[in-house]
Every structure is written in structure tokens, then in C-alpha cells.
Amino acid sequence: MSHHIDMEDHNDAEPVLLSKHAKNLLRFLNLLPARMASHDSTRSTIVFFAVCGLDVLNSLHLVPPQMRQDIIDWIYGGLVVPRDHEKNCGGFMGCRAMVPKSEDAEILECMRKYQWGHLAMTYTSLAVLVTLGDDLSRLDRKSIVAGVAAVQKPEGSFSACIDGSEDDMRFVYCAATICYMLDYWGDVDKETMFQFITRSLRYDYGFSQELEGEAHGGTTFCALAALHLSGQLHRLDATTVERMKRWLVFRQMDGFQGRPNKPVDTCYSFWIGASLCILDGFELTDYARNREFILSTQDKLIGGFAKWPQASPDPFHTYLGLCGLAFTGEPGLSPVNPSLNMSMAAYAHLQHLHEQWRSADGRGNEDLSVSSALKQQLQLSKGVEATSTTTTTSNSPLISAQ
Image (cartoon, rainbow, N blue to C red; front, side):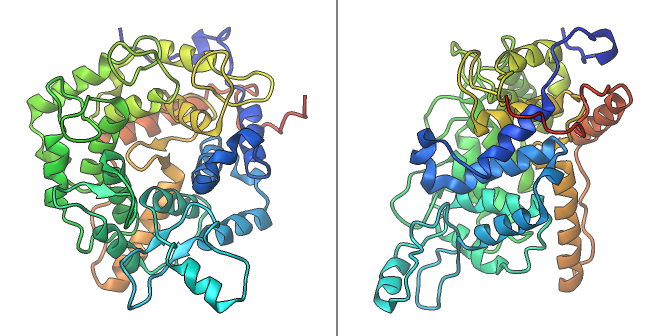
């Protein structure tokens, strides 16, 4: 049975420890534990989870102005702008390992050969910049999109970077988000992208990561979001959409699983939940059971959410767990744009940038309306704000160290 949580009737429900989660994410912007050393090459994704998580928690004010600027400058430090004689490899790198602190021209030129934009790192870097309110004026939008087009495969899929990478639905999504956020598609072939996505639809109406693969919740999100962002979701017929909703709804046990006969996992409260939001079907889920599972992975001591109960929290599951709760209208959380995986506040800033760019290009203001699912989220958020108590407000101060 589908229903919404009435916070007034659930005063004894376990609270979301908003302040502790904010402190947990803020910590990742200052110091990373040794166990995360293997993620150094994708450091911008950790910044994405932390910054965007704080935004969903309405807690970006906890990041001091100078630190905000330092993060913005660090992100721009990974921007690759190809020279005329180089390959189209524009975009952002995930770390600075390929940017040596040297003035030796020979060393710098040698390292230049290994400085490539990466689609996932470019997406997360752009999202961080938008979330922090940057105007993206330091970007050459066409150069970045040329880098996206350069890694598109003939069958419509995308590689992560210009060489040495797999290509699958994850990078189709990243390509779509980059082009959408930059409001420019350039030479990206949206038709072959659409054909790749639809050929990846499996017999059970979930999408696989690559052709002939198994349907998966994460890649189903990537496929649907890419269709939505590229303006092609309407090309799916009504029967197909209803069958997709059925497959997605059947992924709920208490929380959500990514595939049939697999355990539930906090992150799928976003992947499956966002997919249903895109299809205007999230109201078909059981909000209370979803919330109960997510909170079972909440670390009450240091904050954060984990993959499973009794597991260690991490920035990835913390952010996606918060987004999953935001879809249900959890008090104290900002509404989330499911397709872009960022707050509606960040999305509003992005819309403002689009309006400026279009005005400068003489294109005027095109339709930037949100889907009915997003409008429903905004209404949910406004409805629960009135019933929020001091124990669930995001404006509460950080809890002192335990």
C-alpha cells in the first residue's frame, strides 16, 4: 500500500540526525580516512557527495566563504582545455595527480599527454560548481561538449575518456548531464544515444548497463535520466512506461534492491526512487518502509548512512540516502531534482545561468519547466515544513564531537 509519512502521527519515529549528517559530510571536505586512499583519482566525486549532501541538508552555510572559494578554485584546477593540435579531450579530471608542481617545461609537456577530461568527473565537477553558486564563466562550454562528442561510440554509447576506458550506460548519463548543464549539445548525436538506450531495455523492462546485459536499478536510472535530459523521454510509449514502473516498484522490499533476488541497499532509494520520480510513479512506493530501512543504516554516533545496517557509513550512501529521504518529503531536507541529482536550489541557479546564456545568444527563454514529479516534491516539502519541530530542523547547530 502506498502512503505518505504523516510526521504528526509518527512522533515516536526515529529522527533523521540532520546535524550529525552535516558534520559527517563537512569532515570529508577537510580530511579523508586512510581507507579512502584508493579513491584519490576520483576525489571530485567525494567533493560532490559532500557539497551536494550539505546542500540537501540546507547546511551549505557551514562551509565558510573562503573554503567555498578554495573548493571552486580546486575544481577549476582540474579543467583540461585542449590546444589546437591536441585531441578533443576537454573536461575535468578527478584529481591533480597529472598536474605536477614543477616549472620544468619538459616535465609539464610530458604530463600534458595524460591530462584528459573524464565524463564522470566532469559531471560531478560541474554539479559542485553550480551547487556552490559559481557562474561557470571560466568554462569554454563548446570545448567541453566537443570532448563529450569525441568519446561517443558509433552505437551511441560513450566512453569515460578519450582512451583506455569502458563504455556503457553510466557514461551515457554523464554525457547527457554535461550537455544539459552547459545548455549545449554540439556534435553529440542524440539519436544514436536514444537508439543505444532503447536497445538496452531488457525483457523485464529494466535497462542494462550495456547491450545484452542484466537489468539493473542504477543503469535504469541512468537511461531514464539521459532520455529526460535530452528531451526524448516522450518517445517511450505509454505501455512501455507502465511496465518500467512495474519493474521499478517491484524492487522495493522495505528499502530498494538494484536487481531481483538481491539484498536492499541504501543507494537504491535514490536510483529507484529517482527513476520513479522521472516517470511520475514515486507515489506507488511505500514511503514509511523505505524510510525505516534508510534509518536502519544511520550511524547515530558519527552521522552518515551506510550501505546496510551495521556497516560503516560513507559519503556515497550518505548523500544518496538523504536524497531518497528527500523524495518522501522528509522535514529539514531540500527537494532534489531526480534527473540531475542535485538540489532544486542548485537547479534554480542553473536555470538562471541558462537564461543568461540564451539571452546573450539571442535565443530568448526556452521552456525550463519542471516535471509534475518535481512539483509534487516541492509541495511535499512545503507541506512538511509546517510540521517540522526543532528536532528535525536543518538549522540546528552542529553537534559537538562525541
